[in-house]
Length: 620
Image (tube, rainbow, N blue to C red):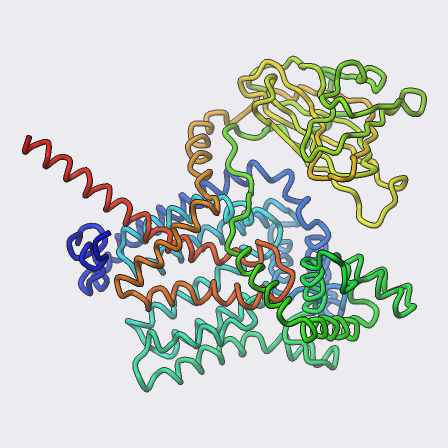
């Protein structure tokens, strides 16, 4: 490979990192048009994602979402004293409940409204990312980054969930933009505003609590000598000023120093337990496990009911002390845990991509007064309906229930109905009562040849509840028949091995809901879904590494540092605690900019190759 700087200099129209190109930015009207195009592309893809997932989004972190809403209703009902003093809701900062209360006040208690606010916010985040890239890199690379972020199924999916994770990203991206912009506009106000934006993110999620000092460390890259210390101080002061009201409120109400919220001890312990394969530290892996263990240890039965009441602050400090004790006695092991977790945070979540067919347009219909299109009683479901030879069935309650005991395969089909006739282009819904006693199952509707999944739902056990007391789930599984003339309803294992799933079924019914709408969207959905299949770790991460190498060899180490400061912060700080991909999703925004550098370089290579072939053809 030829030297990158030489390649860049030979390709000014492709990827030249010279001062003239980086300083000559598009005119205001041109930049506005580009921002609008990226915004509406991102918003359109997020609306399609919302269509696909709106009926199931509430199932993700249901308890956490419920707590946010309950806290918001306290504020909405004027119960301010309880809102600021209820330890049950101190696991998270108060910003998201305040936002929800404002939405409820104006639009009513509607998940759809919350989700659309988040869709718009995340689309705005994509625009900010484009603007960051345009400040640091050629405009073509910035456009690729904007389009990739708009297409990302991970960003689109998490913006649909009624959780603050996607919204907390917006102010952090905006803070980075103001810092990057300070290279041309080095006013202290830019740094103070960047710090304030970090503080706003902390009002939504506590993950960015220590981010301001990290960002302050890179101010020398964008300021001149003599302005570096004031710029760093302004950034940190701006963050502290915005966070301070929460800290002061906690000190007044609880008489303790709590910067934002409780929960660090709980996540520290669960993070340790997550990697303690042998259980030598005797730390539970779940909230419920920690609560029950504390109730037993301290002989306080009420501790088993809630994480933070009673004695939430004292219990949280004990948890932190216990976790730090493990770290002190096992520093090498914990260092390995942090490295493994940091590497894991660079991976992309396997979230649903945009489906090729639009979801049903008859959601929420009352099927109790509709004609049943197809039905089978438990006694009629036995003959020929089992895909696994090791699965067994029994009839219970005089034939009113069918008990299915599955095999130990990881994802094997256990129960498959006969081919059920449907009409193409219509909305349907299966309805069935199901009680899961052991394991974990996936219920899905497939095409007649089982090559396509038309709809699916995962059923999990309720933690801490005995098999006999597990709840009866009244499953409603809507789907679009598309161009299919027949479908199967299938119950499959869902990574429950070595536990054999045990399920009780009642009568299965199928309802015809009417003609499908929005079928014309398939001409948009199919290409978008195909492009979203590219967003896998196996593709994106190598491109990120190539992009870093290209920039370093082109003597753009400063650009690399500016793009990696936020990912490095989250990889270092969050790796000490239990984490989920949604907590560190912001890493992928900056990674997509680096991946765009590699894609533009590949485009340049292909362009050169085509030109050479053309020259040889002419010469021949």
